[in-house]
Image (cartoon, rainbow, N blue to C red; front, side):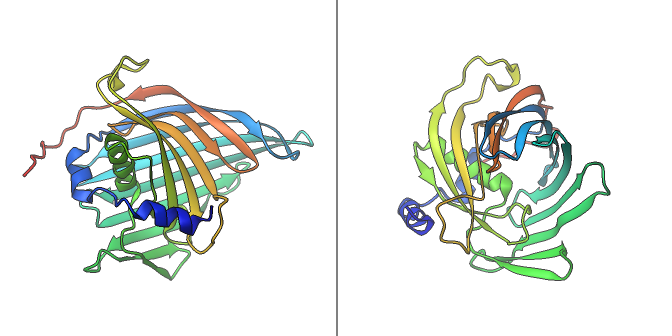
Amino acid sequence: MKLSAIALLAALAPLPALADTSLASQLTGQHAVYNLVLSKLRTHDITGATGQMSFNVVDGCTGWATSQHMTLIVRNVDGSLTKSVSDYVTWESKDGKTFSFSLSESDNDAKTVIDDAGIATHTGPDDAGVIKYTTPANTQLKMPAGTLFPTQHTEALLAAGRAGRTFISPLLFDGTTTDGAQATFVTVLGHHGPGKTKWPALDKYASTDVDIAFFKRKNDDETPDFRTSMRYYENGVATGLVLDFGDFVMTGKLSALSVPPSSCPAVKAP
């Protein structure tokens, strides 16, 4: 099935209004660390891989500040090792209007290079917007109406799980590509009520199992550029990560978690 057909099917059952997902949101700040291990190889060029990823979210009351640091070490078929380090930093306003981003990477301890950076805003009366990149310099792209930023995207898939949906296909802009907004196809694999877990901070939250495929909007291609799956708890913490890079697949096991209490005033529903 082609992406265009998938998107059309998903459009027959519209997403919950963004205001509804925000009112239902139980997202919190977090510090989570994942140990990454190789689970599948699809190439003969790589013989092993290991890594670690840390994910931090700070509730800034008017917005969410996030930072992700990932170290990945790949063993090549000739026995050499390639070490890649990436840092991804964002700020997303809670009104869904503004999103700033920066993605930087280095290989084998070389000088860090900024791949993508800039700011995206929803400015039009129809909720369309614009992406202004500082890296690549002097680059500006239109952002289609209905495009979600990362926290909005998480809220939408959690809302889909609560509502018993089986799939949604929102557009996403997360600042990890210079191509602008991406198409996503989110398959909801299951929804679970609160229950005892290894992490007491998660025990009171329901959770949703999802598989997310990311596509370039310009391509009519059924093969995603990237694919991931996880269990998302209602506070935004993810467990059971699977990261499909194409040539190989990594699984991420949550090894450390802290969820700080919010210092922001409670938001009352109207």
